[in-house]
Image (cartoon, rainbow, N blue to C red; front, top):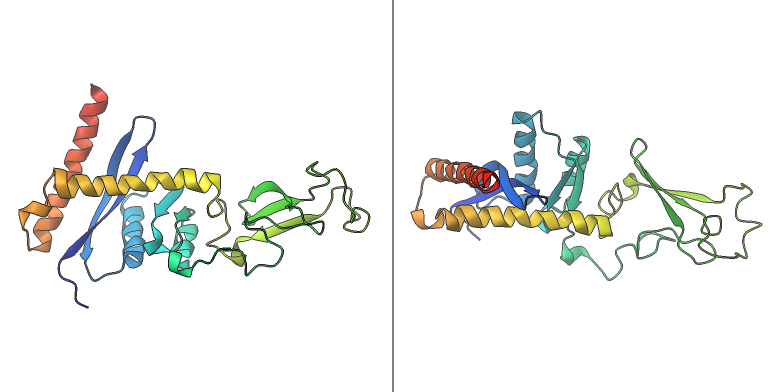
Length: 231
């Protein structure tokens, strides 16, 4: 299979308070290049030329579903929000892990999901406590033998177990879904550059010209947002 032309790759920011999308980095790559490679190279250049910017989250579609992308982002203290490649998924994405429910929580010996107690950023692990001690159930047949501690049994899930599934924001949780909605701003920016500013209709063949007009359109999008929020 042969590819001709270039792919516009942009990193964008969405502000939900003022309903504004802004491109923050524009890149032009060969159409034959996979998006997973572009996501790493573009993010690396974006961070290099903008050391004052420290994004907490970055959202990517399933094309960037690669362990290398997760490792690269976590190395830069960025929490990746990436959709899974559906071709790799089964009905239960946790089926390879013993005693973990379809909700990503450890299952106690009594068959109940353990209570989630938050995430430890320093140790990069998620903490779960006994459902009986946390009041989720009234009784447990293993209460006297499970753990001698009055604190109850505690289980930790480390990111190293599977960085794609676990982490500060586990896959498909309510928080994950809320953050992932912001990724659509990239599609809206692409539409503005390609259609509103007519990059598709310019019939440009040279990459330097395509890059110039792409960046020029991105500047205009910033000016549009400026005017919109001034009025």
